[in-house]
Length: 168
Image (cartoon, rainbow, N blue to C red; front, side, top):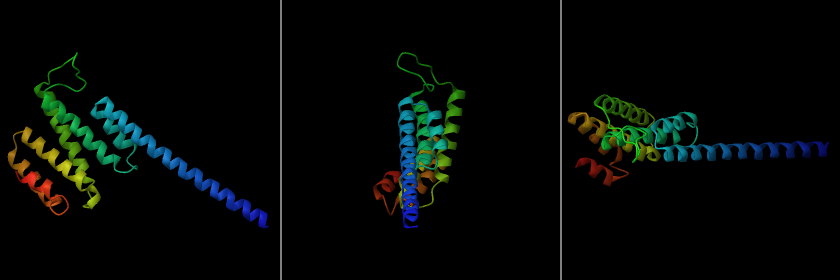
């Protein structure tokens, strides 16, 4: 009986080790997918990472923010997604509107994940700043001001420098 109990304990321990290795491998795979998405430069890749690996760290919110930033980057430089130095496509008015709406929606989803914890402050502030940038790009200064006020309220106690930056 002692031998049987010892074997059950060993089998349980082996199962536990295998379970931990699986979790570690899944986490590593998720971060590698995020790095690959960053290398591609395409917002859709970041959206896929956000959906596929929403259970790993803050990759859901980080993927949404990165995707939204990709759309905003295209609006700022005035070129469509996927444009390179060799092949450049100028951003049309319709594409610009679509990219701004898409970025605003992604920033909004990222902000919705905020639980007001200290750990998520930077991500929430990034989302709020992104929504403010979208509002400014659309010419809606009052909405942008509201987002900046939210940044001040959210970051004042933990990151006063971010709050003072939003005041400007």
